[in-house]
Image (cartoon, rainbow, N blue to C red; front, side):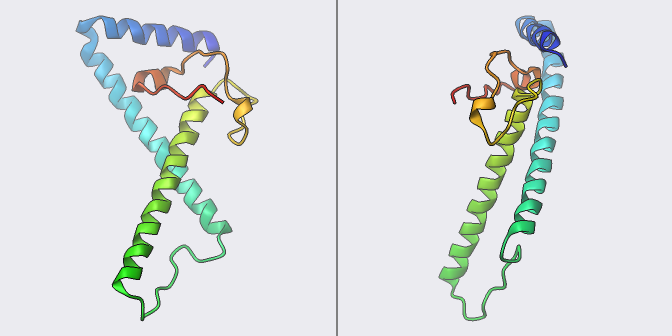
Amino acid sequence: MTQASDNDLSAALMALEENSPHDSKLAALRARASVAFLQAVREMDAFLASEIADHAALPPTPQIPKAMTVLALTATARQREANIKSRLDLATMLVIGALDNQNNPQWDPANPDSNRRDGSPNPMLALLGIAPDTRS
């Protein structure tokens, strides 16, 4: 999409929100956008998991010693849950950043200074009510 079409689509979405007869259409669009967004996050999470597994010194699921206590098992499970949550948060941030910088060929997720500065909203993010952090 071009910058102009992003702005036109965002304006059209705002107009839909103002017209109550279009509530069901807007709800359907939001549902489709939500499914697509969640699918993109899942795909990014799977990619990150495979990249981490490929570069990790340990196998993805380390062998648990037989003498491990319930307390140690609980701590290991909590650490795994925290790692999964961190990875999912990163995947979500990368998808939001990619959508927000869709028309920015210089965007580099590792460089906050390359983030879009023009302030025009991405239509999908606007539809989902996600306002990316514009601070850098």
